Amino acid sequence: MKNYEVTIEETVCGTFSVEAPDDVDIFEYVKKNYYDGKMVTEAGECQFRKMEIRDSSGAILRDWQNF
Image (cartoon, rainbow, N blue to C red; front, side, top):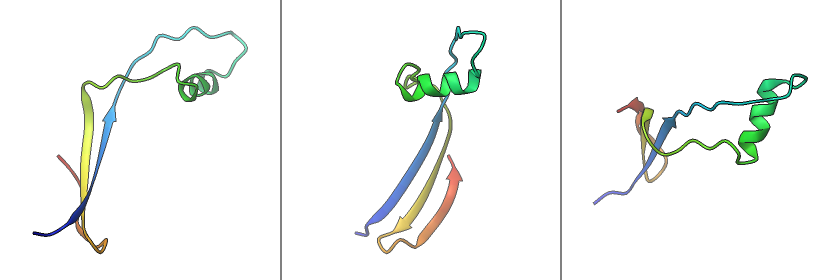
């Protein structure tokens, strides 16, 4: 038996309807709402996933690969 470090990255998308004051930077407004936990994507349809595998010493056995 061997030990491995496997890293998996997933991208989940969500679309939100946003009403914002006229005088705000909409990007900054949405970013603040996101970090404040007011806009949260739900687990669901994964749009993208990739994996990297390393051995126990940290050497890359398989670089990032989509799956």
